[in-house]
Length: 206
Image (cartoon, rainbow, N blue to C red; front, side, top):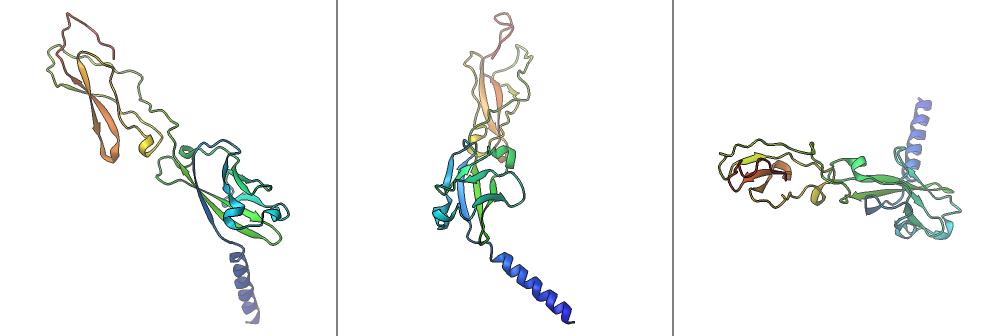
């Protein structure tokens, strides 16, 4: 009975100790693809840490789950800097929110500060169609207003950086109608604006 009580008290003391090692958190918001060495913020100032003791306490950046160390800390200035390329699409795909978790660790005494870095999307991907070209065979008897569905372009960027619209090369016979699917995805429809005459022109390239 006595041994069980001692083990329980020891366990509670250990949990209490671990919880007290974690100090204040800090959050930053940055665009993806920042260059290595770019400054995210001055973490020493933001956490109220003594700049002169960063080196003495062996300040370093760790990860919460042994993933990539995207950040480093400049011990002379207290700046949190980009250490590895941060690609939002590679990390979070189409998720609306993308947050990287890192930790600032100081020793003697051991002290942890959680760092949350919200990665903002930039327009760094071009829209792509499944096919490079589409071929339509249209009878010259087709009436004005006839529509021909086009492929949807896909973009790995999100929000305002995703596909916003389409445009069509100026021509005498067709115009473009842009439509919206559920979720805001846009696609195009080729609309006949002037009747075709096969004797006048057998093929159009747009």
